[in-house]
Image (cartoon, rainbow, N blue to C red; front, side):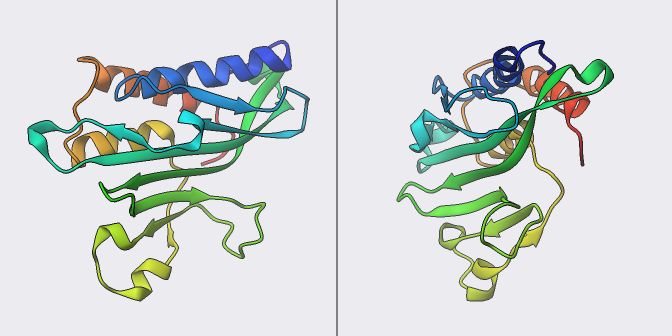
Length: 182
């Protein structure tokens, strides 16, 4: 979402993310840092701690972790004059014992030679093949909304809102409108 100041651009970026999260949790998005143009800042949900999710039919517990890095940049036309650009993300699902089941990662600025968006299948997935746990399965760009929708539908998460599908569709549409790649 565009803003006329860096703070407004960040606030307009975070508002729909927080709304999407409200489908499954009351946890809030925490920002580390300021709003300086071009500087990279981090945001996490629940201060980076796992967010436990309620499940339907007394299934074993699961938790999510969501983190992104972003910067405020100049933008042209309707996207401007300022907007937030995501520069990295990590969205993970953990089992009841805290083992990562899977994670969507994109971290092009890290020391890792893997700079494309990818999926990890981890020990919590109980697949048993070391190769699968080392693999970086290529994906396109994954949004918080897509991650939450997958977790809700696949892992029988009890939603906090009856309109969760509409909320995720609306916030995904906003994300799609303002993103600058994939």
